[in-house]
Amino acid sequence: CMDNNNQCTIWCLKELGCREDEINRYKKLAEKNDIEGIIKLLSCTRCKFLQHIHEEQRKLDCIDSIIYKLKKSYEETKE
Image 1 (cartoon, helix red, strand yellow):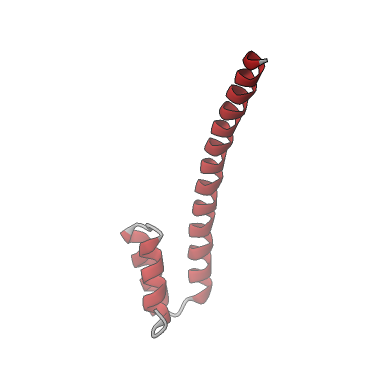
Image 2 (tube, helix red, strand yellow):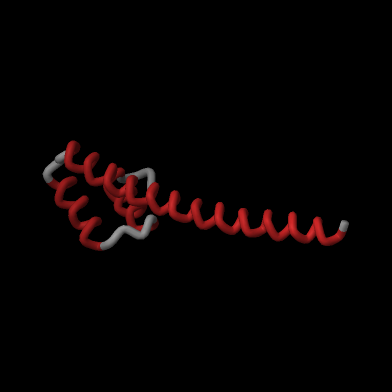
């Protein structure tokens, strides 16, 4: 990944699960050396992943809440 920044970025985008059309859009911007366009594209991609993380965090919070309530209820019945 160290030898070619462009190839490294493409590899990273694939690893992140980006769609082929997103990767192709990156390639076209890179060919034109459109750094502003690349930054905008990558920023949008980052936002999508951050949104996904927040959605998953809400799911974890929900599970944690259920576990907490169950433990609390269980402890109360033991007393």
